[in-house]
Length: 323
Image (cartoon, rainbow, N blue to C red; front, side, top):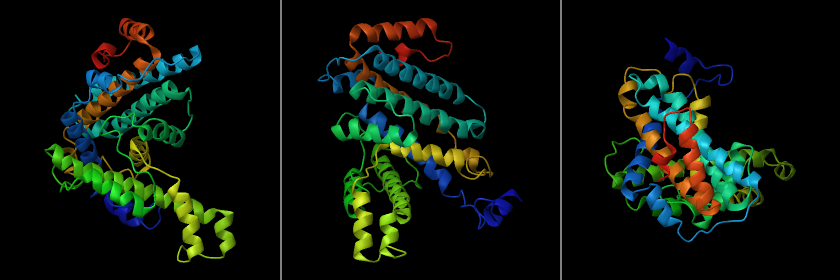
């Protein structure tokens, strides 16, 4: 009954009917599975990240910046601790939606710590955090695979070849069973491509509302002038891991109620999902912590880890992630 009413009948904000969750759920689960397989293949942990960032040196910064880095890492660790408890839930659907929110905010906190450590900045909104991390971290080669994956532009003729290079001939997809890192390459590339296409669509909608577009007196991008206007905007936009994470969170937070929580096959599809989320967030936090430790210096970093483990009220150990 509920499926028929919502999917076919629609709601106030989508009166023609909501999109079916038939494909969204497997794609949601398989992107996280792909990331976890690639992380295991690449061996992303604190030790590997320290080696990756060996050339990074301590940066001079004021106490406010240092405190921001430590605060954001602590918040991320708290979200990880929540996920690592959620994975023990008997029914995955009970925690799947809030698990995605905890995962995303843990990623955003860790990303904010990295950008503060890099240039002393802090963004107050989702888009700002994603843009700053992509520009200051990923685009500068300061992210480890698979978190380094990005497209440099939202112009289709630019980003499709970049996605193809990441795919590397893999036959894996977001709707197929993933068991190997080779298969995961294809699924991760497909999610990056879909995210780039989605952000391109959002950008096109913004262009349509702009005075410059309205002055052209057109309704679409069939004319050369309209395409030039659109592509100029698209060429200045990139899409990286934190952009994808933000879109991922948006689906869980705003998509129709049936997504993640309705249907007899849902629980089977969700098996292992929260565990994989925790693995991915742990790896991202390990990377962020290793980068931050180099920028903060050994004395303050060691003091931070020791203090957190002496005073934390949650379960996950700082030393367990950052040593």
